[in-house]
Image 1 (cartoon, rainbow, N blue to C red):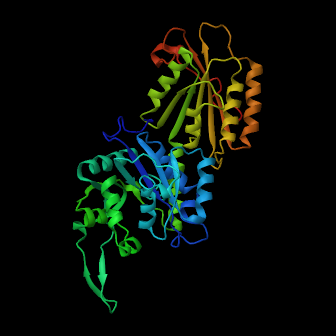
Image 2: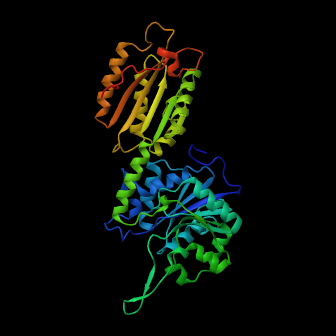
Image 3: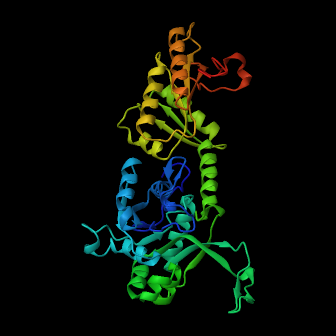
Length: 410
């Protein structure tokens, strides 16, 4: 599990997800379907796929798109390094598209090889990018117990019905009704049997998967109260709202990178402990290299804030490697990337382990990458060997202090 997720996955043999993404985006307007519209330089569907990928207990992710967008979706998967994802050809309606996605687990004619049939399958709209692991776990566990489950939210407006003459016929008591949202989850055999028994009318005009399970399999879905961030991008204004949420989310994430030396790892751990109550923190102890899959996974999640803790004499080289990896990862730099180089210096040393020439070199590098919307700062941490390098003010001048509190290159 990645940080921020649940501590343990569901007690289910296998879980898969089907993401219908075949809509034309008529209500959005414009030539590009909403699921492929870019937000912060990245297609909306990629954010939703990433939300599913972060859940380690989801074994397979099926994205169902219209035939003309299959190659587009495959290129998105390749560009952003998505894993465990299979693209399926959609139908002319939502239900037909979902059915095609489910067939990949049961019918050879729809896939070169059958995927492992899951015990539970999640169905979630590709244009609802802010789904969290907690609600996914809740609907999956409820589906295992009840056969089907779905997220719901209170109605915002009262629902009314109009008569043939255009006048009010009746209204519904809002307190008795809820809005059906996504995600939904089903025992695979139940939802697949329901789709197999569907009439053409259901497949062409229906929109509610929970209703199919009730109508054809007599399965009463468990309704799970969802969170406010399960909303669906439908109109153009929703894209602006999504962009605002994503920007805010990016500013609340930080990745702490250290090498494997004990003192450096300890500082990284203490930084993690200090910050985790305020923002989302990812801590990685690795050597910076192109082949590091953990770092590449973080980049694909679009983390824009990094702290590199080191005790090397030539710290600039490490920052340069990270900048190179960021540029090669195709992360759109519409949002500033912040890199803080935290350099450890032992109090036992009579001089700084990082010399003036190296500081000058880092300042020059910081000025160069600032043009690319990458902001580099330097932090010098004074510490004692064989003791916690992070100490409180009660120890006076032995507390950590900045080498340049204005940063480097700003």
